[in-house]
Length: 160
Image (cartoon, rainbow, N blue to C red; front, side, top):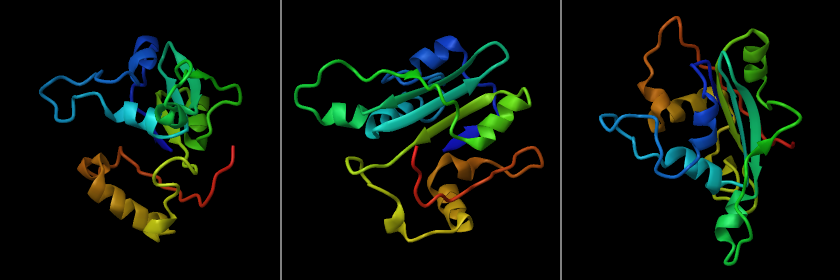
């Protein structure tokens, strides 16, 4: 799960941000090709997407997208549907309760995704994961300030 307390996605952005080759970034920005969120959505069989702006709030989930990609004759296309039980991420629930804005994305590993889980990395402490994330993701480009806090929880297994 990754949650931020940025401006959130408005309704139009929420409807379109999983589309391939669609980006909100300008062409001047590195990584403007619009494939990151699409990979998350179709690379896993479970994704939950939450957003809150001053005028729009949504909690949706898509299930089975990776299976759909691997199916030689798929029927229909995976859809993001309203997730009745609300956000899985407690940080995002707190953000909503405090009238904040932001986005939360949760993906889950299963037997049909690669990797099936992250146990092969051999790390079980949040401090070790934070070092890897700072080296291998955009988290490393965030300069530490008193206004930016990074919380990292390591969950061994998660069942919905």
